[in-house]
Length: 318
Image 1: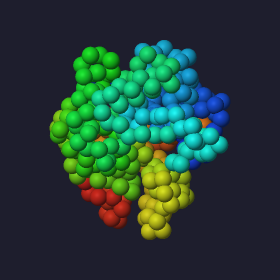
Image 2 (image 1 turned 60 degrees about the horizontal axis):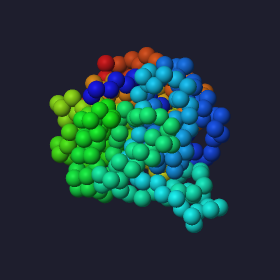
Image 3 (image 1 turned 180 degrees about the vertical axis):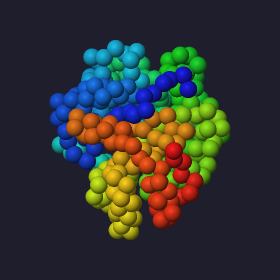
Image 4 (image 1 turned 90 degrees about the horizontal axis):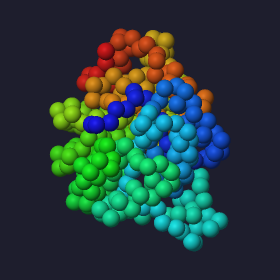
């Protein structure tokens, strides 16, 4: 991949009012703190707050030298005006007005339009990495339309890298086999609670030199605090998963490690992972995540988690 990312990246979902609204000032301060903490990789998408995340992130980054940071956005959902949405709220998990609606479009024309619209919202001249976003039900359209269009843009020097971002591993592996990818963003599938990326995806990425961006490391919130949260992958966490998380937290605590520290450390240790991308809804959360990432995790803790059946033996740790 002809793009270099920092070990930590800031994800932009919260900048798009994920779950609840934050102010423009808070969003700006969040990006500013990430910069102060040395983060130079920022990810966003049209999906996040119907373009709000892109607008906020672009405005916040405009004060910094463009050559000093890496920016990624996504294609697949084209935003269109929604005249009937006046006075309504977005029907997805973002607290924003329904002034626009999402339309799936993985054609070449849709990709070009989506990217052009993203640049307008960002107010920047380019994005470095473009991911095809959540194409679970559109495999053929992506292989035939979206990815060839992005590869062409990369060859022309318009973008630096081409990727796919999903919360499943099997189809990501198929995209790697069928297309010329530089990177994949895998959300929530290599975490303390879910590791299917170990089976096929990570070995394939290592074999082909494809960079992995590990996102969703807190599985939507359940791993974000020492006491397990109530959300898993953006839905209510099943009771048995909460109980398993408590057991993991207890093992971590025996070794002086907080649950969120372990949640960041696990994906960061794998050689296929280039960066761990986390979200934050304020500056304090950015700093907290950076501090967590610096924790020293004893190898015996991972061994204990494996021996107690809480992690598979294939987990990579050092």
